[in-house]
Image (cartoon, rainbow, N blue to C red; front, side, top):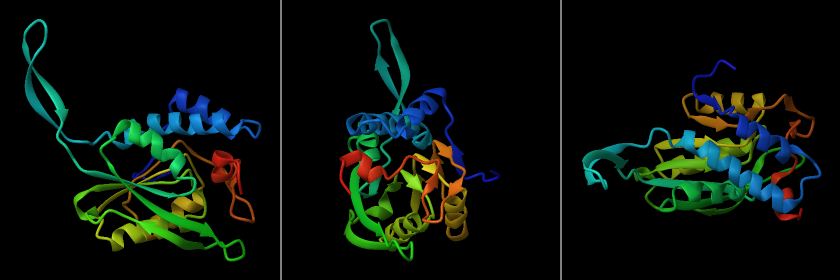
Length: 211
């Protein structure tokens, strides 16, 4: 896919864990663990541009210059429910990040997102915002979430998912050509109901064992 702002993080460990995440017979508790582990692996790349600064430290052997994080502020925004499966993994990497939630469900007839919950920090303009959703399918929920955080003055926004469909990426690109998208895989496409094929199923249902 010729898109400089879409990053497919194709590491062997990610491929292995994703294979087990896709399996229909993977139990819920294992599915949760796999999603967290995949998110941590993806998160290293999502955060690759975090700024650092030099400090002087004393090792047991001598004084040296080392690098530490400079302290860029972040906000992790989970698209409910499935986004919470990625949230814990990202918080392992950046426990001081603020957290926001956007509740969206998809109207089954029109395939459009309907917002039912919103809770965001009031200083998004000062933070790098990372939107979390296991799947980028039609792209409509992603666009709705991006629109929402930008309406709350977010300037620096990224999108992180586990699997994406070409249709979803194309839809986001129509609205936000330069927004970074990070994913473990770009799948074949969508079925007539807007589900990703081969996909991972309904992530929210599989995470929590309920519909």
